[in-house]
Image (cartoon, rainbow, N blue to C red; front, side, top):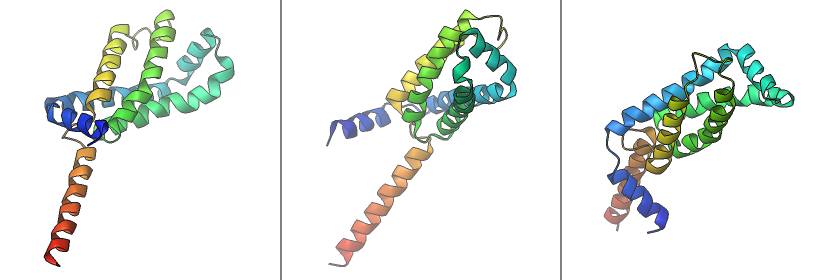
Length: 158
């Protein structure tokens, strides 16, 4: 058994079911954040201009909201949770640096404490993974069931 298998087995046994509710809440917050970016393009462009990132405006506009939306959706359903959480961390770190500096651009939407809390929860989900209330766990169980069926058929045919 490899280290990765042991690590996944440990996190599965130490992942309480209530953590799934927090995973869904974090995913929903990220998804809604991405939708908010899409609805407030002008404020987003102001933020980039204020930080001297005008030359990267197109690539950031076409990636950041969709990373939040896609990653949030994956976290909600519990599929590729570790990857989705890992991808969000640089965006939230940039948010802490850029947005906290320019408080007048997003006065109601930004809260550094909330951003730090989300960062800490993302780290928890990188460590813990999806848990048992997720599509990843369902697919894993389904795969193990099919494997057991095949082994039973093979041993019955002997």
